[in-house]
Amino acid sequence: MNNKETKLNQKPIIATTDFVDTHIKDHHASYWIEVVNGKEKKQSEKKSLTQDVAEEANYHLIKLKDPNVTAGRVAVADLNGDGKYDYIIRHPHSNVDPGVPNPDDGTTYKIEAYLHDGTYLWTKDLGPGIEPGVWYSPFIVYDFDGDGKAEVALKTAGDDYLKNDAARIYGGSEYLSVLDGMTGEEIARVDWPERNDRYGNVNRQNRNQIGMAYLDGKTPCILAARGTYKLMVVDAWQLHNGKLEKLWRWDGDEENPIVRSQGAHNMVCGDVDGDGKDEILLGSCMLNNNGTLRWSTGLGHSDKAYLTDIDPNREGMEVFLAIEPWIDNGYGVSIVDASTGARIWGVGHKTFHVGDGMVADIDPDSPGLECFAAEDKKGGSTDKYMLSADGKKLASNADVPPCRNWIWWDSGNIRQLFFGDDNHWGAESMSGGRSQSIGYWKGEKITKDIYGDILMIADLFGDWREEVVTALPGELRIYHTDIPARDRKVTLMQDPIYRSYVLQRSQGYPQAPVPSYYLGD
Image (cartoon, rainbow, N blue to C red):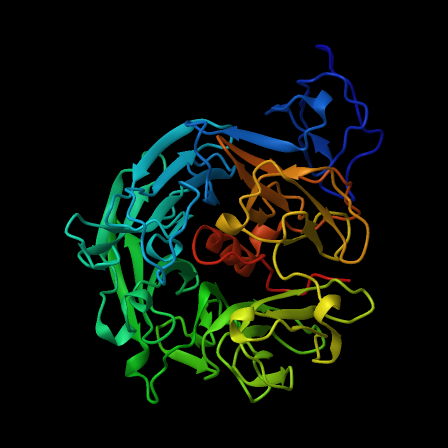
């Protein structure tokens, strides 16, 4: 401070892993601390604030190369091996759903990479063979070859694409590509799961996802998937010596009975049976690590599927399902055993088109995680439901909170939500300069204004509370809490299932991440 070293804490920081400086005067102060086993080490690194402290800006700012660009998706991973998360965006901020005509205005998606300090690395134009929509352009970023630096795995296409009268692409070459995270250069390429009529029409054929799983318990493998509403196919690959090696293919039509229409809008992976190897939750069905079917509920396409410990009084994890198709057996909102798929409880009455859902501890008086869901008006109902971890009805309709954008922001285990953006995400929100805030459901708001479209909620800075990444023209903002923690927890990104949810924020429909264990009051 003022070119002088000033001791800020009178006692060692051992109860938490954060520190709030309430007396800062220097707009560009530097902080350092390095304590191991109670003995101070030599100063090895200074951490400098990058924003004007006088403005009380509680965010880390990354300026984009083009001030007119607004990111539509973001992924985080360590690209250069320095132990810090870097940021990989997809832009522009637009989305064409497979179910509507393509405006065919020449827009192409670009993938762009930045280091954590804002250093621009590279841009890759995906070209006209990838339509600018969620389901044509899945990408994730992870260290797939174990060298300490992350690669980008994504769906790419050639120039031989074929379009129909609605300007939708129905043919042409498609690939799973892996890019070098520091340069954007392609390392490896193989064929993406091919189109065919078993998926249905062009809309249904163009439902693509990508995921990562530790299939042998130690090697991160890439999963390329096609199909949600009819045929479902998953290919598993391993990046080895710069080449993609195929491990297996799962085709739901080869099961007896066949498994169709059981997909969700995300692919989450985690070890549900304790053998150290990841299973793959596709929605209303789950695959084993070797590419065989583990279970299928037969309930149909789930708009939301959450894998976590919902009920800590039960052994193991559960899966919460919000089912889109009309269901009259009472299980349109339900939880099942994560290992076996056995039904545990359901909402108990007919549902029409459950389009959203969430699990979170928002009521300290109700044990376990609360499970809430909302009907989509397209199904003819606008009902909302909230149930306890053991299936008891807690609330309905106006007394049920929104399902999106929940965050651990304060010092406790009760989760908070965002107010002020209509609780939308991405292209539905386009909040731009409108402010948002974080607070408790039916309680006080606890943040200063937050601006931009919410791209990601995740524990990026490591004290177990979550940050929120937002997009504004020419900017990424990573907002962080200024509320001191009460205790210390292992950073949430060390939990494989939490990391899997964060990995999925760059593709599919966003869901708030949850860990494998119960995190609540």
